[in-house]
Length: 111
Image (cartoon, rainbow, N blue to C red; front, side, top):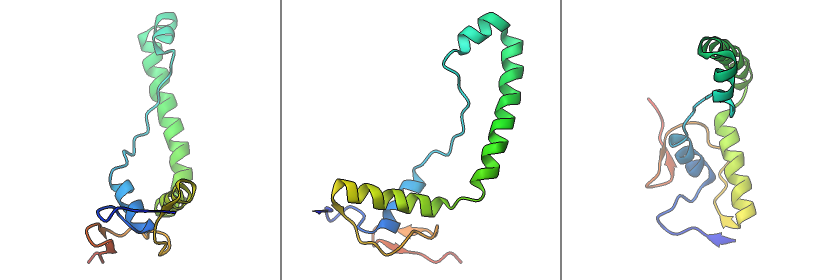
């Protein structure tokens, strides 16, 4: 295992919290042939199609996501990557979604 440098986060939960803080939760609907669709069917068709499809797609995704635990997924991903990369992290269990004091690698209780 490769030890982490002193200034880096040392626990799975602290690293998961840090990654979450920098993750862009964007749900973008894009097509690699947008210009072709606009050219063949017109801008109005494309805009109406895109708006309807985007609403339906994001609604379906939202129904699924609400049953997932983002902190658990992030913690599992950090654990998996650290094992694969041979990076030594302290496993104190999954991050619980609470704010982490990155300087001390400790969770803060939200009041």
